[in-house]
Image 1 (cartoon, rainbow, N blue to C red):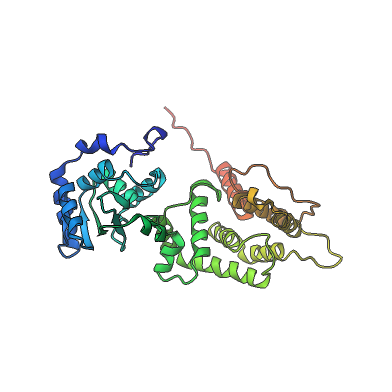
Image 2: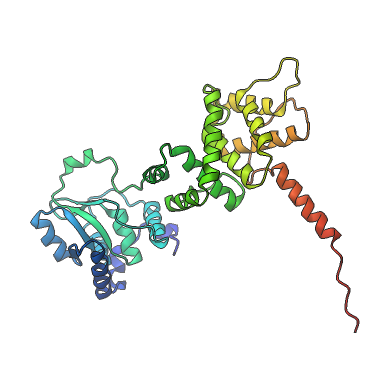
Length: 351
């Protein structure tokens, strides 16, 4: 998929209409219409206008050519196009995840589009038809009642549709797991809903265990704020993936979140990290402390605790590009390096 640059942030649909093959777009639209029981097909502005004048509200298929025409000449009264929304819909098209989900296309009495521009624009650019319920004669006053105008459903909402009863924490865990696999951290753009849903299905047992652990910790300490449930679950999921000792890590997280230490005992790194993270929440500094930094503090303290270190303070790192390695990862790296050094050097063949 071609990535839009800043210069292409607002696509020029007027100048690119002639790049489409109108005849092919009509064929593609007719094929899609058969999927929905041969519903009506609209292929150009004249057909759209006739349909709007009839005042019907039903499912139709709009061709890529007509999507282009709508964006070029019938999108004059809308809010500014958000290029990110169009790119996200284009990503769904490329992933084969773009289909009819009950959405509508709203048109004002003068035939201009009220709600549909991002889905319409994505289909115009990609040259694909779209199935949508067309609603004519939408009034300006009605727009105040519309709360979800063509915005994508959140990943948690998609998981809820798939049967996950409390989807927010699982969706956040999967998003962080995907980020970690991509760049070794919890920062970066949120993955697409389709990617989150696919990853959840592929690793449902892992995500479920991480979710149960996270919720159990916060059920024990509901008033503690060092690490939120989504971040606890994300750390537990990564620890599982890298084959960390989950019993030891789980006990560490429990101590960190609880903020408790035994009387007369030297404060462990888990306690000091919990104090640091709790203070940033209480003092209102958490807005400047992203999950990636909070995760780095937790893993650094865990490494110190596993090494038997006593620390007087856990500092907040100024910048975190990638998360520290878990002990299991470090052992694996050390073993790999040792094995490579011990491997015999092949003898050179004599001439």
